[in-house]
Image (cartoon, protein in one colour):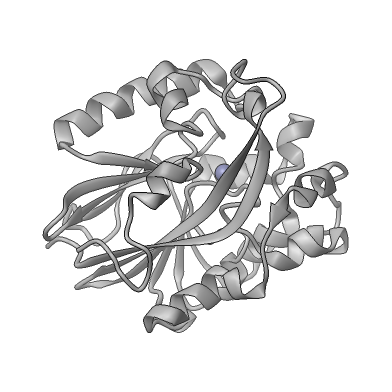
Length: 268
Ligand SMILES: [Zn+2]
């Protein structure tokens, strides 16, 4: 049974250095990127895809977690958000409470995707096993600064119902909302394929690539977990999306977010 609604929310604006996100392109330029999350309503339950940025993390390095993240404050300085833009606050504007969310699917655990997961203790949290493992012990110092223990540390708590998945995962068993592993940006990155009643199939690509130009031309960021894997993943997703006749919405491409209806409007 297809999903009935898909809302897109924007939790923060992140001014990033263009050439580090789309390697080698437009050095010295900045790009004003959105940091979205998505709410999908399905007859079997309500699914949140990503939880955006937590404003408390941006506001104070004391919140980063026990072991901090030395350079993360530099990233935080380029992120603009506020309490009203938390995922848990935004969904109330369209009539849902955090308790209404049955499943949270996290594309990965970077600070701009897993920020507000702590607000969803009543939900099942679906993450790739490889992502859970890497987030706790990232070898690359740049990656270390994008994984804030203060965001995802709660997932270790027995209060949270975490489903670590390996490979494809069909959320309701009917093919309507499916996690598709797309590693490369991070060790356990995944995208989400959603079948909608009227719109047909869409893919929430997460950070499989940063912008449309990067997605089409295999331009990965300089800090990708594994560039070769990311390129192979992108090529596979391009082919899959064509077979599925699906549009792919990348998290950080402003045009992609603008192409989705602004809440309270939604795809259906
Ligand atoms: Zn991101």
